[in-house]
Length: 255
Image (cartoon, rainbow, N blue to C red):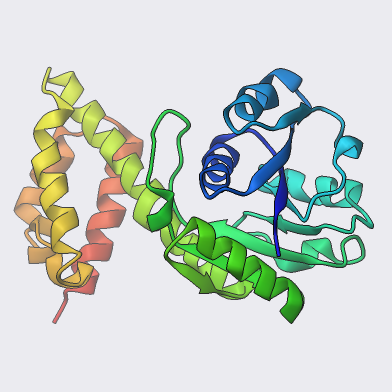
């Protein structure tokens, strides 16, 4: 059973996860970052000890690696032969990143977009878990259910698929919001005027499928409107995005 935790990282994911663990009543002994000032800020919020030397981490049941994907392997190698369960929080990194270094390992992947300055209800965040053996899985599942009401077993392949889908549903969509904001800004129009539209679109896809919810000129195959839009767009890059997305939508609705 997980009674004590060390957090490696102090960014967005590490911050929200640490707060959720602390709120769940699990002791966080250490928060590690190579920059002491960064981990100190988080450690103070969860009553933990801030450390900038990874060797200081000892006598904890679980070590959570919540850092950039390209840095995970290096940290895993520095945790070689630790007796703790060690997990990472990435959707895109395979569990075999632990091979040859850690004997009790797994993944705790929270499917959400995190920003330090925004509070979220972590109990509603889907948590995808994986472990290298049944004993570790049982401990990780019990721990995860203390943090979230939605805990799902998913192997590395399923997690990668979920991560790709999440990039389309969140990162790409948000970039489109950014583009629309730039278009409006040129005419002195506020992005906030689009918020009711965005809210209604989000509500619709909780009741019907995204395919059923699609509207607009590309869905109708209205080339006159689409061409007029293209004439108004100055940026060649944004033109190409408009054309590519429009073609994808139109092709999806061809009879």
